Amino acid sequence: MATINFRIKGTKNPTNIYIRLRHKNIDCEVSTGIVINKNDWSTAKKKAKSSSSLDYTKINNSLDSLKTHILNAFNEDLSNGQLINRIWLKESINNSFGIANEDSNDYKRFMTDFVKLFIEQSKTRKNRNGTPLSKDTIKHYKSTLNKIINYEIHKNIRLKISDINLSFHRNFIDYLEIEDALNFNTIGGYIDDIKLFCNRADKNGIKTNPEFKLPEFYTPHNETFDIYLTEAEINEIYSQDFSENDRLDNTRDWLIIGLWTGLRISDFLKLDKTNIDKDFFEIRTKKTDYPVIIPIHNQVQQILNKRDGNFPRKISDQKFNEYVKEVCLESGINQIVEGAKKVKIKHKGKYIFRKIRGEYPKNELVSGHTCRRSFATNHYGKVDTMTIMRVTGHKTEHEFLKYIKITPKEYAIKMRDFWKKSNY
Image (cartoon, rainbow, N blue to C red; front, side):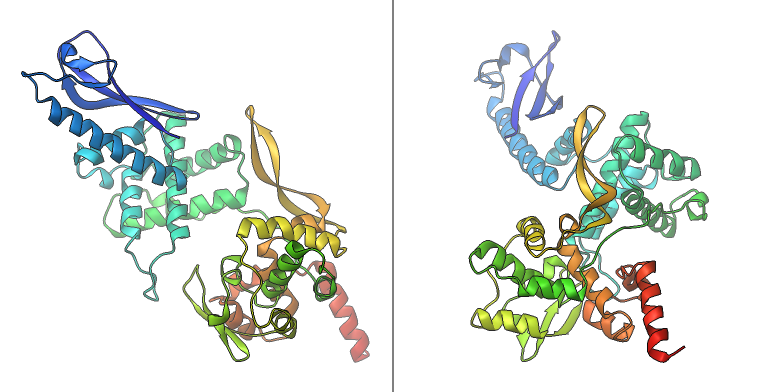
């Protein structure tokens, strides 16, 4: 739990009251801007002494209010991945006291100030269809801001918006790859956000560097090696008897529902009776707030019938992703395949989790994301693409095709079988 204490230091009168924040490996201290004479301060009680010559009540109330504000801001920002350091602490103090930035136009010059304003405005910004931006989108903006702040600290610089050029692009990618051990797909997400920020600044008439529009200011990416479950594997999982293991039986039933709806894990695990309209599921997706209608597959209907019309017991995303690997293992889905999974690695003296490409048992690569990929892949080429997209909620064919995981060998086999069938 975070702790906050106040103290004074130095020999001069009056002297500043400092605030110190500590939590695990976080330890930072800055001046509150409140001054007091040394003789009016209680070191033991960490507050102003009762004194006829001092409005000690006002000072102590200010410190109490500041402490409450800092703790509330700390809990919210820490959970959102915000970097907590001296800069954060000083800004939180200014926010508590309602102190404006020294230059109210800093957002027109400095990258971090612009991004902070951009994020604040994003809380009320709408998508083209009139829906608000998702919390995950805003959370990613905040993550990008934290990476920029960390980069500034690493380089001991303060980036201007006009500094976002090809040189920054190269150095920032190198920093994220070397210092944070991030892969190119993750780095690409941060670069995309930075280009978005620059485009918005440019449209608002703020001076930017035109190099951010050049093709060389590219979005890094790796080829993904995500797996999918074939129809034969799905049938094997569906047929597996888990009657003596309620935990796996419950997880298997959710897996089948996910595999035959094409929904994201955040959506299919939230399905309930209110989403059923005769032979269809109707749901507004969480990420895009997009309405989709999905026919209820026979295997899914059998699961509902088995449970007297009820859905499986609710389960968290984390538990589903943990248990589903065991479900697949018990179903014999454990052949060695190429893929990528998060593994624990040692980087710069500490252990972190990063997605590493390699060869693994297939069950270890299955997660909630596998459901959506499997649905798209198993129907591709059998049902017209627009129909599949209407069910999955994809708005563009380009985005949809990212989910198709058929390998070159599988395409070749499909062509061979077509030739044989057609007597070519």
